[in-house]
Image 1 (cartoon, rainbow, N blue to C red):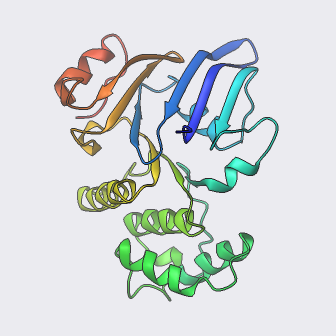
Image 2 (image 1 turned 180 degrees about the horizontal axis):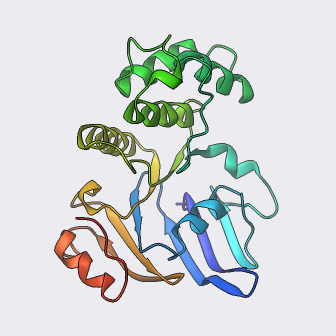
Length: 236
């Protein structure tokens, strides 16, 4: 079976500073993988490589079996939720989604928009201005927008940062449910309370993978905290 995402012996530097060195990563189709690490570990760089926003200095990045350096075809399968919001605050919820659907050539997106709004708990807010939404509902809308073209891969870079506990839990549960339905999820975080025992966890430090296993196998929150000795610790 072809991996959904492959990074093979990737090197990447910003000027003289090496960020990733011989970095290798494989994500199986339908998996939920959490990428953990202190600030500066290289997590967002991995996100940007998979998203096609960066190219490696050496090595190869493949999405759905296609090299992102030679073709952007694989990126059609990727939905992205960035740390910073990219919503149009002046448009309504449904206007944001219809505009995004148009960019992707979707001619009749209404039924899919209705389904996603229901799935993410945004029913009744179709006509609300995005400016009037709270942070949790904006994040849910960004996830709905990323899922609108039915991607097979979903990348999320610290998607619950700054949210209240109830909003955070709702998003964590919704994205896990999507993974159970077959979407490959890469969830970048430093918050250990977002993880489930069976989640595949990759711990990064200084551009390298230092541990990988399920959240339970790595000892849960207590065990993972030990990986951060001498570094910024994750939040429990």
